[in-house]
Length: 485
Image (cartoon, rainbow, N blue to C red; front, side, top):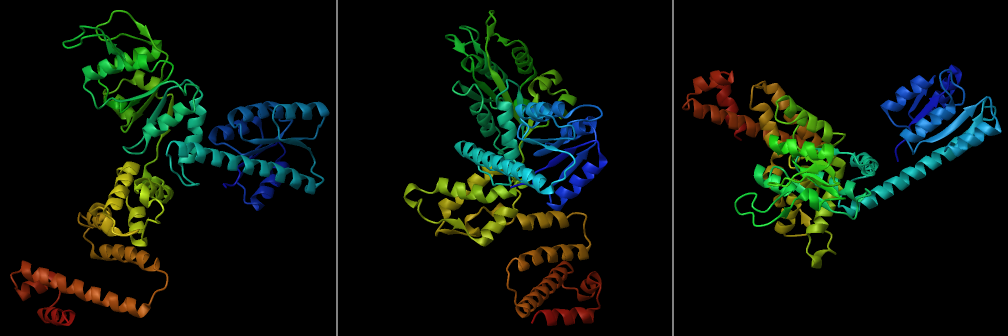
């Protein structure tokens, strides 16, 4: 569980200092504000799990701040501190959702410890509940994540925006799961039970996309034999997910803007305006702000779509999710009669999978696991079951880094040595004699190969080869004989 973030709001410097030491000893992050103004600034920057709020402040009062904290951070436990305690103020604070209140000065530290322990236990219980509920909800949509995954915060945000009729723009690379997240938002919204329809704006021509979105009348174009209901009509009272919205043509963008502003649209070839109550969610793997600057996307449409912006992190930024994803996809791809088998990747394969950059994200990982299951010869999956680009990615990255303008041989060797050291130290027990012998053999092999390649380039001219290698012909002959043993 994450350490609770604590906010102390009190105009007395001594009180703030006391609580700063108090919570830092418990290794809890703590921030101190000496006024309502400072407190509001901190609340705008981040959310807190526990707030200790003085009832009397120079520019506001604790009851007002309590209401604001409850609105902005419903999960935050608030303890009211007062040196002017009355039954009325205490009851009012409790009715408004305060966890409890305490009198100043804090004569009984044991009483303060007990109160804070109860508040922290309440916070931990909420965290456990939220975590379990999120995992339960996520599993229903095959959203696989570790306990410390950044997807956790993203799903909490999705649950908040799901209940509001506001536009959401999902941004992320291909394969990060934008449609899955859109379905999650729909399922947690009041529109759940009504249609959820998705369409890829980049998969259709402009005329086909317009017909799909808005429908068409009979005879609107050659081949239209009857009235066709568009997706906006079919999604009435539900949710419409427009994937790759950045691919929509300028004409389609104008029509989308109209329906978002007024709820009205026209079928292709129609003269009568139609209305639809549709919540629109959109997604893109492009930067739409750059597109607006290049006049490729309407700025006014972007403002309509980008009310809430959700960024889906690529898999390389949430590597803690790779192991649970691998386990999930192994289970998914195993034939029914083999579900009881303990199929897994060996350590070497796991190292490759966890260090790979995953440009295709979760979708690519799913395909890699499906391939491994299909090619396996035992229950232990090794590198031989992985695609060549996954196995060789570290070598390719090394070559890409050092084959260009970077020609300093010391830098190349140092980089290689550090990578090799990581692998060696990961093995646990190390035989230094064996390591020294192996390294000597590799050095001899490398020197011999360099000499051979230079001799080939010089047509076996030892004098020219020696110049290129910055040694004398005698030393070159010695090295060639010595390293060739």
